[in-house]
Each structure stands twice: as C-alpha cells, then as structure tokens.
Image (cartoon, rainbow, N blue to C red; front, side, top):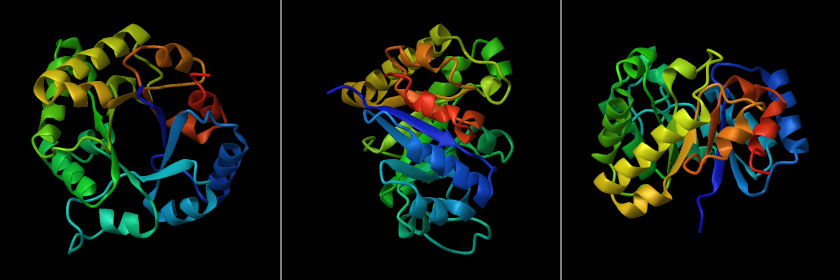
Amino acid sequence: MGRKFVVGGNWKMNGDKNQISEIINFLQTGPLNQDTEVVVGVPAIYLDFVRSKLPQNVGVAAQNCYKVPKGAFTGEISPAMIKDISVNWVILGHSERRQIFHESDELIAEKVAHALEAGLKVIACIGETLEERESNKTEEVVFRQTKAIADKINDWSNVVIAYEPVWAIGTGKTATPEQAQAVHRSLRQWMCENISPEVGESIRIQYGGSVTAANCKELGAQPDIDGFLVGGASLKPEFVNIVNARQ
C-alpha cells in the first residue's frame, strides 16, 4: 500500500468569518482529489466554526497546542480542548513557532508526544534556516529536530512530517524539486536507520515552502514528497489545484 498524498493548508493568523466562508466555498466546490487527504490549519478562535461548516472529507487542524491537558497556562489550548470540538489534527513545531516564539526542539517534542497521547494526529514541522543551509547543516538540523521527537514517541502512525526550509517560507523562494527530494530522501533514510525501516518507509513527509499551483505538480512527482504544507496559497482558490497536484 503506497503512502497517501496529504495536503495541509496553514492559514496562519489570517481570515475573518467572511474570508473563511469564501475559503469553505471553494473547498466545497472543489472538486478535490479523493486520493489526497486534505487538512486545513485554522486560527484557534475559528476552529469550531470551520469544523461545523466544512465537509467531513476535509480535516481541520489547530495551529498549535500545549503539552498538558489543562492548567494555569493563559492563552494556550490543550489537545483535549481541540478534541472536544471534533477537531482531530494539530500542527506543531512550525518554523514561526521555532523562530518567532523560540520554541525549543525539546518543547515541540513534548507537545507532539502529548497531542498523540490525547488522540490527535500531528503535522510535525522541521526545517533549516538560510544560514544553516549555506553552512551545509541542512541534514544536521532536520535530523536533530526529528530525533528530539523520536526520543519522546514510539508510535508514528498518526504523525506526518512537514519539511519546510525556513528560507523558502513566504519569500517566494522554493527549493527546487531536486533539492526538496534530496532532503526528503535523506530524512527517510535516517528514519529507516534510526527508528525502523517500517516507520521510514510508511511515514508521510510533506514539503512546505512557497508551494503554488505553478510548482506543485513537479514537486509532487518526486518519489519521497508525500504532500505539501501550504501557507499563503491555501487562502486562495488555487489551493484546489495544489490538492489535485497528482491528478
């Protein structure tokens, strides 16, 4: 059984009810490739609204959560709260959480472990900065970030990895299909050797970094790219074309 293509749309801190209704409309109109799993990452305040409006063939993800079920953590949400409103996914470790909010590998790994324990599916993000890439540290960085998660979990069946080169997010720069494939292949090999061959072969690895309708087909044709985590383009009708990249 091959790995099912999975496309995530990360809305980030964007949208109001009017814009979200427009996004829901083009997702409902589609048509969306039935062989592709689709998940949209929604600002926390709109999670319940979006889940109630979207058809069930589109998954909904929180964009973050904390590492414990409840407590005195003002402004945070827990996996239990996310589950309580029938949302089944969460995006963790996004480069903006790492870069802007200074979340460590360790904290992200703890969040991933708790989210999985609570029954959520996780899109776990990894990726290097431009400085790290230019210093030839890409593999060192993504292996370190992945190892932090591997040290905290045993069951990878509900994890999708999103490789997002930080230098290609919102910059208009995209890794070439060959560059992206090379990192995905190295990452899969690392997981085969350091976790298990079964996990390495079955784990779905998305590419995230200025994916558009124009470049998605070429990226999606790479053997180790199993989908995308899409930022700005997920707010636009072209997201449907990205979902359908493998048609």
